[in-house]
Length: 285
Image (tube, one colour):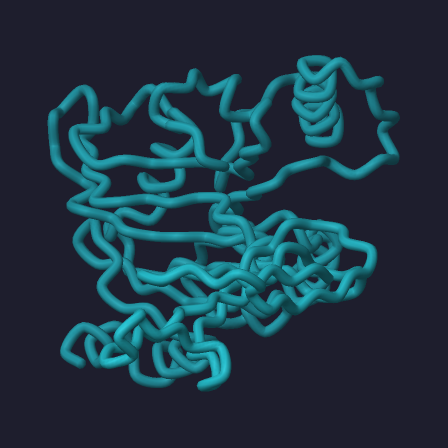
């Protein structure tokens, strides 16, 4: 680590003191400490009636190996939604009324709410479903404007959505569909395609009520697969009505959506409160 002692004064010193120490460095990580010099380093004018203190700044130029860089250790923001509003394209009915949400790398978020609260509409707007039209707000995905991307571009960027009721295509299994979506993204990046046994890549996976109609055994199997998708640099956004899914996939944050907006955010205890007291208690809190 290298130190520099910088001086600023009305009167210069012929031989200013210096402090230095050096070692191998990996990153520039500036840091400053200001202090006053002891009296022997003070400069006096010719008539010795006035004195000026010299200000010194100790600057750390670099970070030694093994030290932690706080800036780079912060999780990256994957999705940032601000004041998002949207309508049904055909009927012009307003569904989303100012949604705000931030998801960082490695986080699991769950959105809960009554039927018609806007949960599924929100997820479809994020992936660019043509049935909905954005009327206001912004959505940033990995620092890029998501709303200006075509649906396939959003997929190639790392956004994936599991639909609540996927369209059935004769002769095409879910595995074939997922593999095709994954390989389309890899080809876009100039990477080799994956075989059917390799896992789907998604930096943000949106799971819309994947627990619908599942018995306990099937739910555990699905939860195990979803937990296997979670890595330090990707995240999951789950939409569900019930706490039982959250018993197997532990969320960092639980959001309650009502009338097209997120009205409350908490940890897993919020889902437990909802299961015990219902949405009426949550809405009135």
